[in-house]
Length: 324
Image (tube, one colour):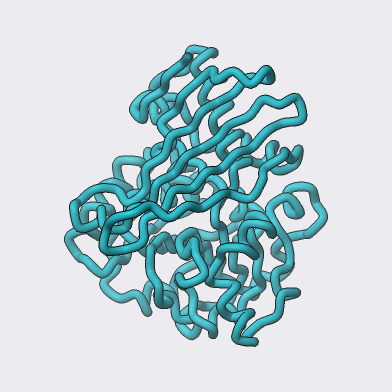
């Protein structure tokens, strides 16, 4: 069995190639049952184990096991860990991949894929809200599809915001201004793209601060009781999701306002497969606020895992993504 650790995954995955692999996967489709979520005992906050399978028609596929331990933040450890097992068409496990690193990359790539349909082509100002381990890759991915000139990092903890800023700088291979945001309101009012990756249970993005024409990318809030956007933002925005099945089962940013009558289900216009296959045109006006909510989908793990294996078989090394 091939075993691929995080260092090797980062060395072989090019962000532009990963984005295109996801585009092809969503165009093609696969069999991806809704993830199973199990509560893990212990801890002061709820700890979870997620099982996420995805298979092609020939039976080949992947299963990812993910642990979410919120208490780890206080231990200066990642809250999310994962492992991905790749199976052949005969059901044999053929590879074990570090799922933590690959999840960060494919999550960011999915948001960047959505951005190619939903953000303005001239978007140059990016705001990253949140300073967790995913934040640098969100910046890297968005920079790979839009001509970003300035990246602002906002977080509640200034020290962590500074550290995230340095991490982002190391991932970008051309001159991009990367700074710590000292005012979330000002940053949002000037942003073309806002990418939010937090574990917040209360909204951190006020809709009244978001300017017309912004693309808002929400990748946190993976359960019913979590919110990153407030009601004003959801009410103003046209809403898109990674998959209807996942978002309508888990996305608090959508389910909570629907349950309270703030919006209706038909406000969710399309999923990534609709955009990729041309069933929805995506952005139609430069003035609209477009909101993309993702909760993660196993089809992304399948595409990303295959890209890693193909890249290793092709002998690729030291191919860090570039910010175009």
